[in-house]
Length: 301
Ligand code: HEM
Picture 1 (cartoon, helix red, strand yellow):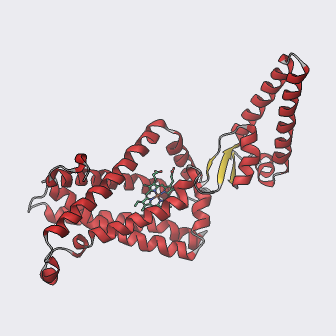
Picture 2 (cartoon, protein in one colour):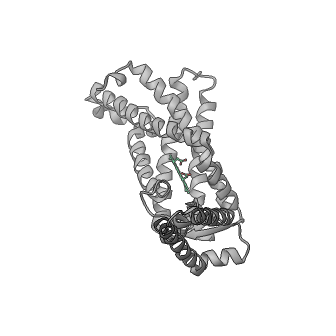
Picture 3 (spheres, protein in one colour):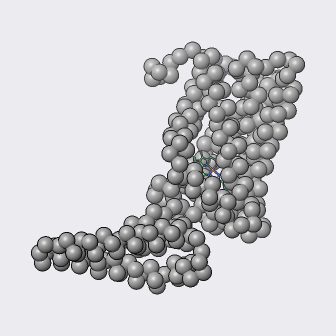
């Protein structure tokens, strides 16, 4: 085992519990943002929140902490589980007599399901942000106008400053490439419709659209997670898979909540029933809250 993970069992459990509480808090924020998708505003609120989360430097730093926390949570949970299995090799015989709650016994398995879910989930959304998979994209009209103006100015300045024929030819080539990009831009139905209707954003762009236009004009674009969710959850199998995984997450969280409090020594016979109740309500709230989103897109959109 790596040296830095070879600390006392209680330290591992406390670290696991603290990380667990941090991850549970993340889920509340994530759910809050996702529930904005349910508003009848074509995804405006959700996109504004996603834009903030995708561009704010504090949030970007938080993302690194989050991924590190998820990784450490998985590693520690596995180490503790293997220790438990090694320490109780005959435990299976008395399994039926054990008074441990089912959610507790199933922690490792519900955890593995959550991990599997994360893999699928990242393929569906996050990997489009880092360019690993193709998604749908959105770009602000104002950003296009600004980039267009800036590019025009840069090119005319470069042309005026060109000292000889070869420098002029180079700028002319750039101008031709720019004009070609503009032609693609003008012929693209999504861009022209958005510009004519005075929309603030051009939505639901393919990778080819953004590459032809945004890359040539040097405009920033973002994944259109609202459209991606709407498209994904038109598929009944995706809806079934998400609901199944969210039930597993519910089981995982039911036990995780009370277990974290117990490990941190905050459990008292007087408060244990209240902690259990809050934990159960939290777990139901999170899994039902998230499950509403695929069901909403499938049945209502
Ligand atoms: C229907 C349910 C869900 C939907 C529609 C959804 C949607 C999204 C979207 C659009 C992103 C990309 C956001 C971005 O990178 O800016 C994302 C990221 C992420 N989701 Fe979910 N999510 C759902 C459920 C969950 C659940 C249940 C978990 C945890 C078990 C989870 C964990 C994450 C993590 C860790 C990230 C990456 C971190 C981040 O970018 O904020 N999601 N999700």
